[in-house]
Image (cartoon, rainbow, N blue to C red; front, side, top):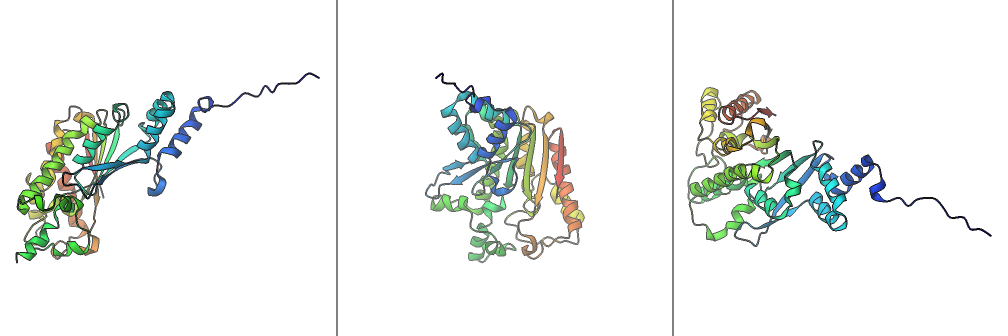
Length: 303
């Protein structure tokens, strides 16, 4: 009896259609807990035992790529080409610290073959007040006035401030200046971490951009023109820090999109309860201030 051999060929991963392989890469590499299959999240987790800002990167995508490299370099490269393509935005989350620390960790731990291809980045919740509001409590303890005392009831203590611990003996103003320098340095690091960047999204808090974290006086909402003047002032929070972007060699081809957030909402301290119309005016003025200082392809604000 003559045995018949099956002529059915064995299917391998590389023999699959490209569209099917890309769907597998996306399924394996993207955490869908945030509801957006086109967002690649990279989170920087601060080591609470550290007093020098050390932390770790957390990203399902980076973990998947690391595993693929151990299996097959061709599949690894193919996954990189897809996940760093125009369909995806790399969202950088660094709630505990200014993004400078996250960008440093990326350059140190992630292969250049990955970062050099990323063209769309979103810096989530860029903030000064997020890291300095706890200083208000120190003012209260010293009997100094502050309109931001209710912040501690809304937001938990800044891990960045906590990690510095007692080793920091600087005063409040100096600490705030340090946070601003860290944010400014993050803007300087961006082109080194992502040399192919062509679109930059930045999430900012409206109040964070308009007032100093330790402002002793409430805003006079009846004088909108005064508020507009303050926002145009280059010394106002975040204007100077974001202006560091102008030094990027490729700034002329980069689209910058500012997304406004309102982290306090109805819990704003007295004097900061601005009308929607006033907020829109101030937001637009802030965008105009950035346009005067950063020669980007475009700078657009979104509520």
